[in-house]
Image (tube, rainbow, N blue to C red):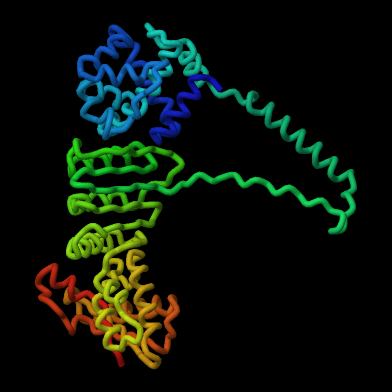
Length: 438
């Protein structure tokens, strides 16, 4: 594989640009070497911006190339301070990439490109011949015969193999006593394709890590983190891997960051699951953060949420009464997708705990699951929705092992409000599931 193709592959994986990496590298290389003064002038831009040591670490032969990470080394403002807004805009227009993404892409691309063009420790005065040749070959017209020859050769080999199998009789089946056990094939590890992100707040200092699908996702998350916590309070790194699928929770997480400033808070996403650790927070803070996760991340299965009802269930002692049970259950909070009777994935753990508590209640205990809505919308629709939600909770509890004959669903519509329906907070309290013993 040519040095140019190797460089393209590495940058494609690191930035998530995929096939567009070739074009982007070409634009950046032309920008570096076709401006007056070439590579030396390009290096001077970083020297003049106070980033000379960082640039020097990228040169071939330097043992400790600084990691390319927006929080530590080369963030968007540093790129712009070195190259200037006009040059960033030029690269964006030539490569067809949004100018807001270019600084983050350059932060990943430049260290690799600088190291490649300074191979052997030589400061280049023009684009190295190996890269020129690689780019030239990459742009050569498509020649069908170059592809047909190896394909025809493979077909010929396949035919020969098929012909031999059909002419040669199959070997006789051996008995178990004389057979030689086959050597088990070694399983090839499958790389994870799940997006990952971890967060911890230690005295206002935020530490993060993770892997996202593209430089665009990385750039957007860093910008949101920086805007919320300040650049000086951030540490850690985010990797980019084009094989990782996009993070479906990313946009919602960005809107949550201003409410995630509690000292001691920790959480981690892996795919569509999250682990939440609020153990270092006071009870009110634990409840607030858990409610935020449950309401904003309904399609994420959240483990470790603090729920007052779950806490009460955990404190139930052996021989608890039906009254003790319903008192604990009525402190739990489950949520539904907007306007529907579909339970959010974030309610899964609460349903599991509720099911365990009901199963452990005295024999013969029958629990009525009541659905309630606020007064928005028409009364008939609210009544139907409340019934559907009560049935959804009953079905979920049965799925977790509660005998169906110990449960009954009932919808109350908006007829039993707990709070003022004229406020958002009041309506939120009125949309609930209640439990009573029958």
